[in-house]
Length: 147
Image (cartoon, rainbow, N blue to C red; front, side, top):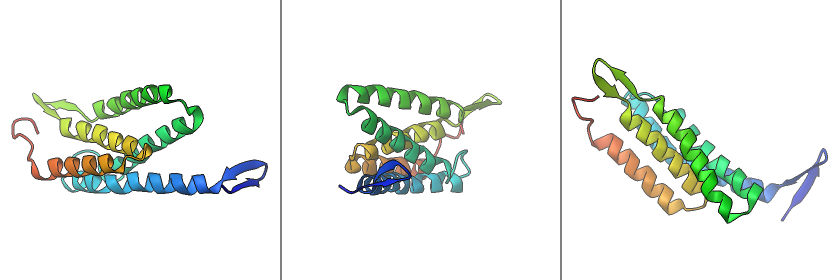
């Protein structure tokens, strides 16, 4: 473990590299989802989804580093779910008797869950979630009456 003091601040470079790789995985897994939403012109796009994934991942990495307590993890996840739910609610619109943005809101939540899975180094679950979300958005058409 290499710890270097820089300007009086101790930095564990190995831990930083590990976190960078973890966040990069969350970013890369969110790119196909963002690309599809951008291409389909469905609200949020290529920038939003990777940012949601890396933010979710980073919040949980910070919580893991701060607490070191397994009992705190459910509270961190609960707070994350609430915040992402608020962001998703902003994507839902009602216009001319139609409700728009439900799939966008759900995919934002899915992307946040994927970022959380990456933060806990559950890469298999994150990859599966990324794949299923992308396939659902790409090949299952929206119902004609709602979107």
